Length: 357
Image (cartoon, rainbow, N blue to C red; front, side, top):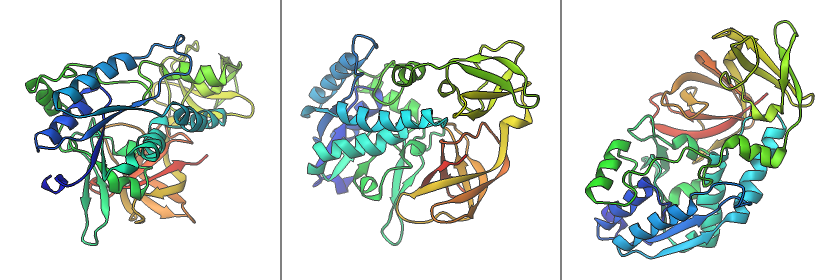
């Protein structure tokens, strides 16, 4: 990282262990990056538990330890106007959105850049991802050696100019190594648990997040094969295609296999692993190529944040559209999910497209 010596670097410091180790990694090179804490928080602080106070305390300690400035950047309005609007529009339509994906494009590398990041050459984050350049000088998003923590799927909608400014100082580590560095350096966040919630929203439960903005609306739960009414639900937006746990419908097990948003109907299939919960072929649209390179025919894909990469073939189907032919049936393919596309060796990430109905 000697090429960083003359670069102006901003670090997005959240208070978690990953971004804390980012500051250490840069500081050990003799660099003193400016640190920024992005403030979001829930709209109704009295309603939702928020960890922002603890986050800020941890971030302050790390910045002070390495002699870095720390500035709070308020992106509250941009988050609720952009990421929340995207999420709620999708769930109302019966789709399965990923707010964390859009948070990276719109907030971490978007709104922050507009407010402060434009003053810097590079924006460093604690993502588990890497980058490389090819012979033509193009910068690629590449996977981390930690298959469980790899976050390239959450970055697959960023723009080429955002990737140009992105720096991932811990991307070559696995999680255990990051923890070990934090312990050795006595960082305050060393033993802090990873956030399991929505990007920036701390302990807020996704179901409560949706209920807050979309509300509840009772509807029927119908067995797909027979048309038999098997129960009622409080809104199709609380359920995901492929979901089995937490349904609360009698006579199970049941899987959610289809949604009718217009009629507020949920279709379920009976059994422990019904064939109706799997798909081998599905279309994607609005494919976003991060650096403008179209993907090859033989690829690996992800449709959710899991350690595995699934081999598949892509068939072009028009502008920004592809038909995905998976080598094996995939469980829980849901319209609105992002299908993230990698090369056959799941090393380079080409980008992602939204799964179509």
